[in-house]
Image (tube, rainbow, N blue to C red; front, side, top):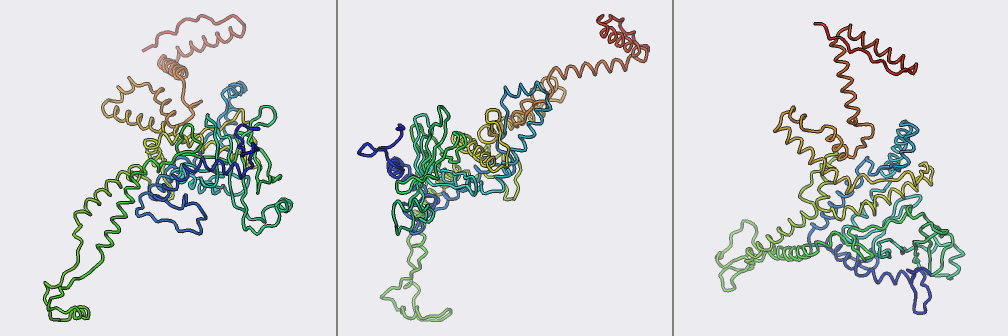
Length: 539
């Protein structure tokens, strides 16, 4: 029996439903926290327990939480998956590249060109399908609940599962051991021979459990085994397996906590401010509603008749004394000012945390690369710890799943996994390079303002500067930037050409004869001839 298999009181292995309920008790603390965070931001992201269609969700008294979640999710999506730009690169294994280089550089160029076409095909798949929609929903779930689960089917739209729809088990090394997904399906979707095993039922929906478990195939091949169950009956046609790095099930976390099966959300860090803002806003709204209520008071012993006031039309004249009539006031202006200043202080802190105060992205169909880089650097400054998880937990698994799906549908050639591997070029690695590039540009601009071009060329290593700039920009410099030897050879050839030009026709003819004799002797195996130096140029 697998070590992570659950057992009941009789030491019998549990089926999917029993194991799901057992693991759900370990998930409950995280789920309660996620629901509390959703109540203060976007309640329908993680609704209360039960059917969301049959219950009324609580409406927050403030919108800063919802605005912050949407803003942060939009910036993360823009940085992780730039529009019409590959967020990954297919690279060749270094040892294989050395073998291929022995056959000529043209083959390397052809391979890089072919890999570039594959990259563009995957990006086109993302742009033309609903990948961004599902990923955006998953990022929102991560921000609020800390967890989400993506499923990339062979055909159709990508699906996203909330935390209350699946359970997960990890080992001490943070590797996923088991995922169980719970869905409600119509009985008509169950095959007849399976439905006959549990008899006729009036139920409108049945609980379908999908089990994804780490295992081995053969002696050492690591795979994901999958099957589905309904009422503790395994559906035979659903049995299958995936290679360990091509699973269509992608569990996501925002913050990773060692020793915990589930992640923590970004909103959880600011629950204190959100709770305080919610209470103050509720008090302010209710107080403002009470203050807006208009009530007039009339002295009961006055000569002014209340009935005359009620029946008087606009502009009428009635008998009465103005001092007998007053308007009820709360006299709470000073107290409201204290509440208002506290609300403004908390709102500023939350706006800074959710990056609401520093947006430079224009509201346009297209955004420039500098705007994307600014957003990326801003995210690195605020979310550097969490941002690195997106590369390993979201981007690489999504690329592998999409490529696997496109290979199965014959829209991509099957690539050798041991030679070609995808590498993420956005995320934390690209953000760090973006900061390096910005600092390098600022240094060059500052030095150029204080120093002359001659001094800059004298003290700066131009080749090293070009290499650093290319590295910061993520550009492959192979064959692009000349080596020091190539520059020295070109300088030497240029000096010789200039010397020959200045020497005159006689020296040129003499050098030509020497070179011809040298070539002739080399062909005869006699070695080069020690010729006389060229004569001095004539004035």
